[in-house]
Image (cartoon, rainbow, N blue to C red; front, side):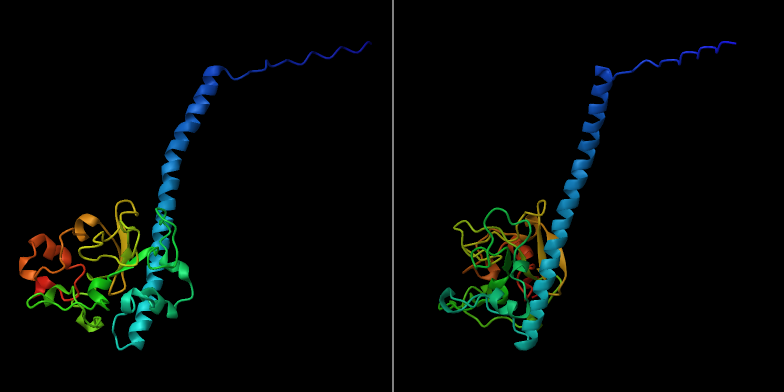
Length: 248
C-alpha cells in the first residue's frame, strides 16, 4: 500500500511591526525614561548631599581634637598679616585627607587646598578673629570687628544654632572662600549649591541644610553698634554670634 503523503504543515504568516506599533513602543520608552531620569538625578544629588555631610562631620572631628589640645579655644582664621597657618591647616593636623574640605558640588571654581579656593568657610569673624591691628572705638566693641583673642568653646551660648563651618560661595574678588562671612567685604554667607541651600556644621557637631533667606544678611555690621542694628540683622546674627545678642 503506498504511503500517504504527509499533510502540509500550516504556515503562520510573518507579522512585522507596523509603524504605529513602533511609535507606541518608542513613546513608552520615552515616558519610562522621563520618569526614571529625575529619580536617578535626585539619587545623585542625595549622594552628594550625604558626601558633603560626611565631609563636615570629619571636619568637626578635627575641631574637637584641636579644642581638646588648646584649652577649648577655637583656632584663629589665619596667621599674622594673612599668612599661614590658616584655620584648616590647624584642624588638619588631626585629619589625613585634604579632600574633606572640598564640597562635592563645588563646580563654580577649581577647588584647591588654599584659603581662596576652599570649599568650606569658617565662622571665623565671630569665633576665630585674629590678627587685626585696629582698635575698637568706644561703644563699638560689641560688634566684634576689631582685634580680640579667639573665642572659647564655653562662650558659645547656643551651640546648636551657632554655625562653625559651612558651604561657602566664591567671593566676588575670588579671595577668601575659607571664610563663611565677613562684614563689609564678603557677606555672602551660606551658599545655595545644594538645591537652594547649603550644608552648615554647627558648634554642637550636627550638620543641617540652611537657606540664605534664613541665615544670610547683607547689612553692614562692621563698625555699627548693636543698638543700631535692625531687627532683621539681630535675628540673623543669632546664627553667627556665639554670645547670642537676642539673649542679652
